[in-house]
Structures are given as structure tokens and as C-alpha cells.
Length: 106
Image 1: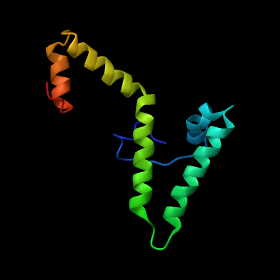
Image 2: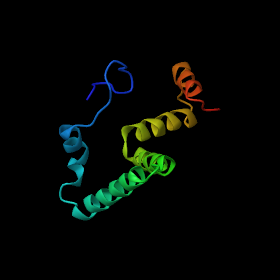
Image 3: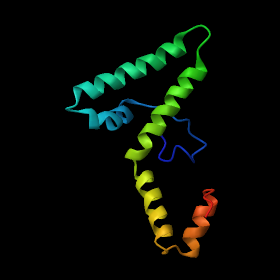
Image 4: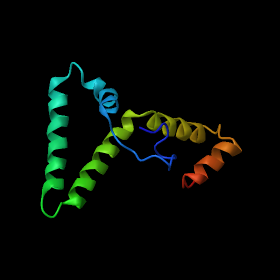
């Protein structure tokens, strides 16, 4: 898998066994959660196996999963930190420029 899959246009994004091991490591010791994830993945697979494939449903499910993961990421914490910096009156011009580039109206 590319080191920077969002910016490296010369390599195609793919998932190999190591990628899955890393992504699924937090499920070790949580068999119910692992089973729920596996069932959700199979639901998406079934959308893709229909004729014609139900791409809108599969894409919507993947988008929902990505959105559900957002609060668990460091992006979430970073956004919260920027929010607190602004409302506490500690924002610099650089913070404000970042907020503007993100489309935040203040």
C-alpha cells in the first residue's frame, strides 16, 4: 500500500493482508465487535455481487462507516482542539487561515 494513499498518484491503492492485520488489530479480544464488522462487510459485498451491482447502497454504507469512525480518529481531536482554541480567544492568524481553508465560518 502506498505510504501516502491520498497524495501518491503513481501507485494504486490496494489492501493487502498486512493492511487488514493493522486495521483489525483493535478487534483482538472483542469477538462480538469483530463478528458485527464481518457481517457488515458481507452486507456490502452482497450489494456489489448483485446484477447490476447496487453501488449507491455499497457506497452509502462505506461512507457511513467512515463517518462513524471519524470521532475515533486524531482528526476528531484536532478539530476539537482548533474549536477550543478559537472559542477561548487563542486563535492566531494561522489558526484563522486554517479555519477559513476548511470552510469554517467565524
